[in-house]
Length: 281
Length: 281
Image 1 (cartoon, chains in turn red, purple):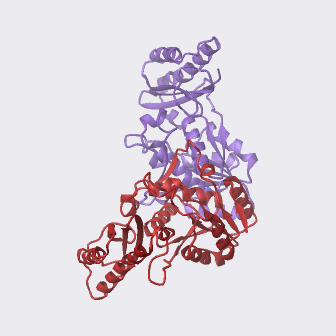
Image 2 (image 1 turned 120 degrees about the vertical axis):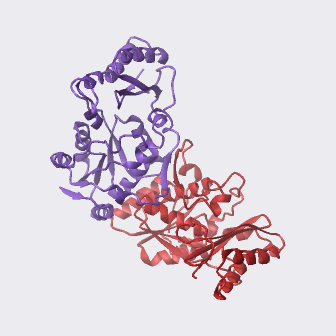
Image 3 (image 1 turned 45 degrees about the horizontal axis):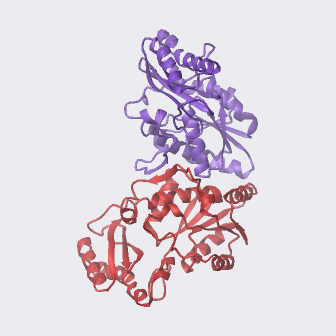
């Protein structure tokens, strides 16, 4: 496995691989890898000749009061995990090699980015779209796997690929959960023992909705109310948003009567966690 | 020479050419070709295996009160000119195949786009950047030639390529002029005989500055004043802007003491014409 730090070297390597007819698969990450990331690599591995994993905590997708500096990092461990997962190249650039000081070009998605996480994290998806567009150009990828845990990000990137005619096949990787249901996230590291327990309320509230839906309750206001009650019983849990939206347009819905994305963001103490489920009526 | 109308077919063709190791050169145009466009093809031709010319009057770079519908079109003539210039593929898509109705992703350049034409044509460079990013992805080009007549566009695109790590070599094609100095433009077709004569004031004012500069006059206010006087003598000529800017940052300068772009836009009757010169102190 090769580690490449220079964007120029990454691109030259990728262009050379493409000239030789190789298929490139790509899993972009912010590092501090967990089984969720590894599952994405496992999905990509059989469908490509060369598997590239990027590890880059992208500064432009963090807001001024967010956890850019605190974001957990452990490159040595990540490196070993990538090697074990069969990655061929780890692309591990420094922030100052990825962005010029006078950078002035951004990729903006203006419909799907507006609500959900976009509402509380202004500029987040501009940072995500821009860095993913850059990474796709550097890695020259044929297919890229993104996790369904970041449901809005996934849909925004699919839209970007469609609207900019980027020749990359986007593959959705299912959410990977801890045995007790907590969705895997690098940010779970922020949780102490008590908060780790409290964090289960996200998945529990999703399961509750699935169960109510099976019992015939399709009115969003009622479903949401039950989630608020459940999460309200957990000390230290603060709801940032709970949204039922059309799975394609991300427009809010009043009833679950077509494919609906239920997404929520909850703070457990200072830690912001997200989770989601796609509901079928 | 092959004519491709479908974006999907263009991209599949280009990807296949790339897999075979071919180098693709690209000249994007809005059609109604003149010798300026042909000179760009001549520049690209020796440096690529396959030369693609696109003909697409891109609606997203026109403002609501601009000349989208009036923009001159003559595909049959364009086709013959492309063939004569040695193009291998003409990409000629319909607008509704290039943009989805719910398109929501845009490429924005936020520094170089602000002044000059960006000031009077809000949204213009968003449209330009977005369509060029799309075309680059569809044509899978290795090199692309853009004319220096659209000086700001050229610099905005160079910046986009740099900031988004697009692996395309941008080549600058010098301005091609009529024997009397008028810069070639598809919009020259709008000029009647009298206006055609009046339109010479753009190049004449650029030449006047070059001459004053040689005589030691480097103060922008004075140079500009002389241009205003010269163009002021032409009936029906209305200055939209005359700007002396740093050739790299496009920031306004007070003195011509480093590489300076002198750009101007002048209306001759209802027709908006642009021209420019790079000044060396």
